[in-house]
Length: 128
Image (tube, rainbow, N blue to C red; front, side, top):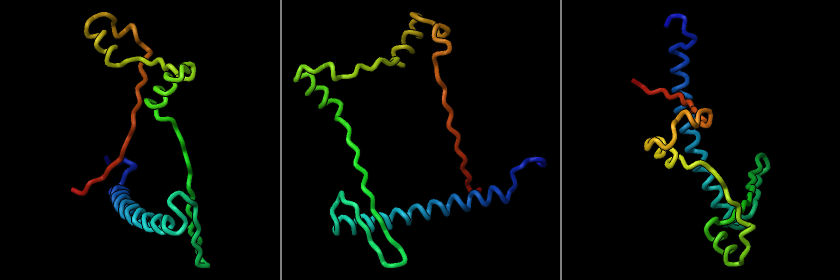
Protein backbone atom coordinates (compact mmCIF):
# COMPACT_ATOMS: atom_id res chain seq x y z
CA UNK A 1 0.00 0.00 0.00
CA UNK A 2 3.00 2.31 -0.15
CA UNK A 3 2.03 3.75 -3.55
CA UNK A 4 -1.59 4.26 -2.51
CA UNK A 5 -2.96 7.76 -3.15
CA UNK A 6 -4.85 7.40 0.16
CA UNK A 7 -3.09 8.62 3.28
CA UNK A 8 -3.85 8.17 6.97
CA UNK A 9 -4.35 11.95 7.19
CA UNK A 10 -6.95 11.87 4.39
CA UNK A 11 -8.96 9.11 6.10
CA UNK A 12 -8.71 10.90 9.45
CA UNK A 13 -9.85 14.19 7.90
CA UNK A 14 -12.78 12.43 6.17
CA UNK A 15 -13.81 10.93 9.52
CA UNK A 16 -13.63 14.33 11.23
CA UNK A 17 -15.60 16.05 8.46
CA UNK A 18 -18.23 13.31 8.46
CA UNK A 19 -18.80 13.76 12.20
CA UNK A 20 -18.85 17.55 11.87
CA UNK A 21 -21.40 17.28 9.04
CA UNK A 22 -23.71 15.18 11.24
CA UNK A 23 -23.44 17.71 14.08
CA UNK A 24 -24.07 20.65 11.72
CA UNK A 25 -27.08 18.95 10.11
CA UNK A 26 -28.56 18.19 13.54
CA UNK A 27 -28.16 21.80 14.67
CA UNK A 28 -29.51 23.18 11.38
CA UNK A 29 -32.58 20.92 11.65
CA UNK A 30 -33.22 22.19 15.19
CA UNK A 31 -32.99 25.80 13.98
CA UNK A 32 -35.26 25.08 11.01
CA UNK A 33 -37.88 23.64 13.37
CA UNK A 34 -37.73 26.84 15.45
CA UNK A 35 -37.99 29.02 12.32
CA UNK A 36 -40.96 27.03 10.96
CA UNK A 37 -42.72 27.20 14.32
CA UNK A 38 -42.23 30.98 14.35
CA UNK A 39 -43.54 31.42 10.79
CA UNK A 40 -46.45 29.04 11.43
CA UNK A 41 -47.58 31.20 14.33
CA UNK A 42 -46.88 34.55 12.63
CA UNK A 43 -48.05 34.05 9.03
CA UNK A 44 -49.77 30.66 8.97
CA UNK A 45 -48.82 27.02 8.46
CA UNK A 46 -48.53 27.08 4.68
CA UNK A 47 -47.62 30.69 4.06
CA UNK A 48 -44.34 32.19 2.98
CA UNK A 49 -42.73 34.54 5.44
CA UNK A 50 -39.86 36.89 6.03
CA UNK A 51 -37.94 37.95 9.12
CA UNK A 52 -35.41 40.76 8.92
CA UNK A 53 -33.08 42.21 11.54
CA UNK A 54 -31.01 44.43 9.26
CA UNK A 55 -27.97 42.24 8.74
CA UNK A 56 -29.79 39.02 7.86
CA UNK A 57 -33.05 38.23 6.19
CA UNK A 58 -34.71 34.92 6.92
CA UNK A 59 -37.10 33.77 4.21
CA UNK A 60 -39.49 30.86 4.24
CA UNK A 61 -40.63 29.60 0.88
CA UNK A 62 -43.55 27.21 0.59
CA UNK A 63 -43.80 24.88 -2.38
CA UNK A 64 -47.08 23.20 -3.07
CA UNK A 65 -47.27 19.90 -4.88
CA UNK A 66 -50.37 17.90 -5.58
CA UNK A 67 -50.90 14.41 -6.82
CA UNK A 68 -53.89 12.15 -7.05
CA UNK A 69 -54.48 9.40 -4.51
CA UNK A 70 -54.20 6.37 -6.81
CA UNK A 71 -56.83 4.10 -5.26
CA UNK A 72 -59.38 6.81 -4.53
CA UNK A 73 -59.03 8.45 -7.94
CA UNK A 74 -59.24 5.18 -9.88
CA UNK A 75 -62.34 4.16 -7.95
CA UNK A 76 -63.99 7.52 -8.57
CA UNK A 77 -63.13 7.52 -12.28
CA UNK A 78 -64.53 4.00 -12.63
CA UNK A 79 -67.74 5.12 -10.90
CA UNK A 80 -67.95 7.99 -13.39
CA UNK A 81 -67.35 5.57 -16.29
CA UNK A 82 -64.22 7.52 -17.22
CA UNK A 83 -61.81 4.60 -17.44
CA UNK A 84 -60.11 6.26 -20.43
CA UNK A 85 -58.56 8.59 -17.86
CA UNK A 86 -56.86 5.67 -16.10
CA UNK A 87 -53.37 4.82 -17.26
CA UNK A 88 -52.58 1.12 -17.64
CA UNK A 89 -48.94 0.54 -16.95
CA UNK A 90 -47.26 -2.56 -18.32
CA UNK A 91 -44.22 -3.69 -16.39
CA UNK A 92 -42.47 -6.99 -15.76
CA UNK A 93 -43.48 -8.90 -12.63
CA UNK A 94 -40.14 -9.89 -11.13
CA UNK A 95 -41.59 -12.50 -8.78
CA UNK A 96 -43.55 -14.22 -11.54
CA UNK A 97 -40.55 -14.16 -13.89
CA UNK A 98 -38.34 -15.73 -11.21
CA UNK A 99 -41.01 -18.37 -10.53
CA UNK A 100 -41.31 -19.14 -14.25
CA UNK A 101 -37.53 -19.57 -14.46
CA UNK A 102 -37.53 -21.85 -11.39
CA UNK A 103 -40.36 -23.92 -12.89
CA UNK A 104 -38.49 -24.19 -16.18
CA UNK A 105 -41.18 -22.39 -18.19
CA UNK A 106 -38.55 -19.98 -19.50
CA UNK A 107 -34.78 -19.89 -19.30
CA UNK A 108 -32.70 -17.02 -17.95
CA UNK A 109 -30.98 -16.76 -21.33
CA UNK A 110 -34.40 -16.01 -22.89
CA UNK A 111 -34.29 -12.70 -21.05
CA UNK A 112 -30.61 -11.92 -21.70
CA UNK A 113 -30.07 -8.19 -22.05
CA UNK A 114 -33.34 -7.39 -20.29
CA UNK A 115 -31.97 -6.93 -16.77
CA UNK A 116 -30.69 -3.57 -15.61
CA UNK A 117 -28.19 -3.66 -12.77
CA UNK A 118 -27.52 -0.58 -10.67
CA UNK A 119 -24.77 -0.11 -8.13
CA UNK A 120 -24.52 2.50 -5.43
CA UNK A 121 -21.29 3.18 -3.62
CA UNK A 122 -20.81 4.48 -0.12
CA UNK A 123 -17.76 5.43 1.92
CA UNK A 124 -17.70 5.18 5.68
CA UNK A 125 -14.91 5.50 8.22
CA UNK A 126 -15.11 4.07 11.71
CA UNK A 127 -12.74 4.52 14.58
CA UNK A 128 -10.90 1.33 15.52
